[in-house]
Length: 273
Image 1 (cartoon, rainbow, N blue to C red):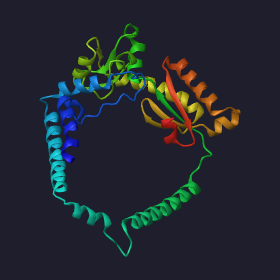
Image 2: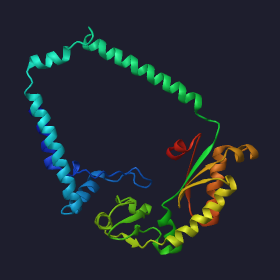
Image 3: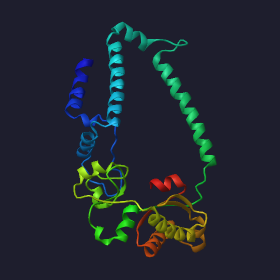
Image 4: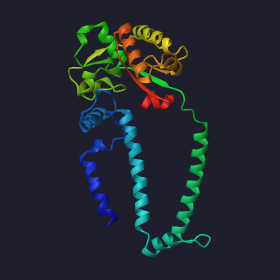
């Protein structure tokens, strides 16, 4: 029975080897809704064949599969009495069900205690704003060269790209993807070389806006920052949503670029909102 259940999975892996390929592709990025993930994964698989990385990943996958096969072989040798023995083994006079119940109770008590400790120390009185510039490098390049507007474009080259605009993302092109794979996904893709002097200039402009709302804002990168807007909300009697919208408008007026903003009681939640 065990062998019969494993065969369909093995057959599926053989028919679609890219599904077991260890490179993980995600479309969890703005502008990538509707991307055919299987098509992209298949392309990544085909274009990666023959590379040192691909060969190393295949070796690692073969090693893991061998371990699984060995475990299945050992499991197949267990008799019904062996399985019954391990299922009904007693410990301190308790049967398996009682031991599991005791474990659950113990872990539940530890978890409840930890939750109370965290509840007592966390501060939900602050208002944090996370700002992320939209496709920053690509947006700056488009602002500098309007002819790129509406055309699939990526910042980088054939070896690796830093980011892609929304037109390119529709094809599955995204940051940290080798350029030759991106070009395969999108034959019309335009490459623009990186220009960090230009990106730094526009980043400085956005930070001047951020300082008006939080002089001590935390810059996470050239295109990302965390702002504590508690004081400005209280001083101006505005909601966090109103401050966020005002900041986004100010950034656009000063730079010509757009940004996204999330609001929450701490930095982590503000980033994922």
